[in-house]
Length: 298
Length: 306
Picture 1 (cartoon, one colour):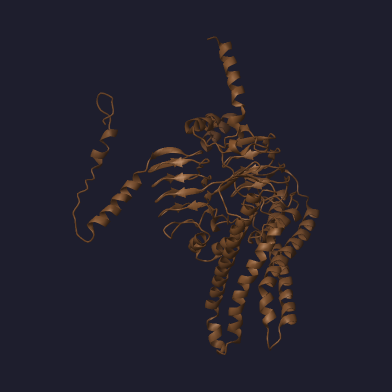
Picture 2 (cartoon, rainbow over the protein chains, first blue to last red):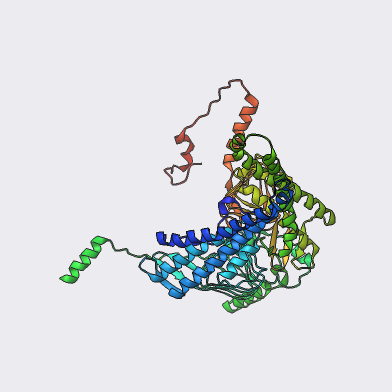
């Protein structure tokens, strides 16, 4: 239903390098997108305000405010796209593993792109109409269809491809860039048609999800994981749970069966759970390093 | 039995597992956010937006033409702006309810399993209903007093009162009933409708008194929370799961962790307040740590004292 305040996060990146000069682009976008709104209000005032009886003015005002909001979002998207095109001429966005450090060119430009996209996506996301979100994604180079519902989750705005009829659940995270330690990893995420992503799912960069897949809630994928076509996946990292036959024509009586055997279900989930054994690893302290160095010298 | 025979049996079992019936059991939970992106819903949005805007506009019109001196007008402007937004939200409530009543006359909302196709009336009307409710809930949750969204939920026909609290969660606005003092954690998704493949499942969720849901947990349709039940954070219930009275559940899928002792403590407090009233009654409550933890101390013969 409606997003709570604590979860209302639009598509933006979690850990972005903040630089004062990036704010210039940001402020420019806010300023230029509000200009048409002001112009529209002035025009409306000129058209419909006359002293004796300004009833028209009031009647069409709510509708007109709606139009103003939509144009503000569209203008913000338009100018953000222009700035993005200019930025991409200087440095073409590319996939790969980069150092997360201000000296790294890819990391800097990735941060700049995210800063530019922030204002229009935020504006579009702050509105109950979902189609503005989809326009936003389409303009920034995400391949989607208008029938997709991507607005309940958190979706990155570049290097993502969606097929038709994809559903992204509440609070799901679909990312094409992730920061691990000191590295920024950017890889293309592909989600094919008829995929149902459950609530709170986390999809890491480089994941390829085949057609007709269903992901259980709270499952997550690894970087570069391939999910086969037509399966239901569960767990973190996602493993095959069972064959997906819910896209076939099933007589509805069969679906109404409820889970009577709770223990069997728990066992089924437990079988999927894999314990990972940690190898014992000796971490070298500074003292050891110094000793090693002295040994080598000798 | 030789090993070969065992292997054969295993193979047979695996074949059984791929049998049809077990595959159609829905023992997992997905999401309810299905393609609500449709421009035709603007037909519903714009009248609600416009009419409730008109209500506000009439108030503003009266404000501008009133003969009060402008200093006083300016003084009361902030209050008036709050009143405007409040009025806007509540007129949105009113008009969307009108539309809902009209739509429910055409098609009565009901539980069940439906196909998510364009021809299916149940599916189409479900989408329409969620779309109508969404604008009001969205507005009321942007209002600086977030807990008043209980008013909107009640207005749309959910049975709950102000002792319950769900303003930090994702909640469907139909087919849910709350008892007293239900608390729902941050980011929890409460779905009375779920999309599985090509099918839409709508089933009622019931919360009994004093039940508690942890943060970021997902609740599937048809779940029944007993009295004093606690569901831990990051846990998931499956379709039609029954959570028993007075237990703490946790995990994916939710399983019993331990009995809920906190509920008993709370019951004691309430009980004492009710019975004793203003009279002073001295109750002796022995707190002896050594005595309480006796069963943890190891005995000489190696066993544990019970």
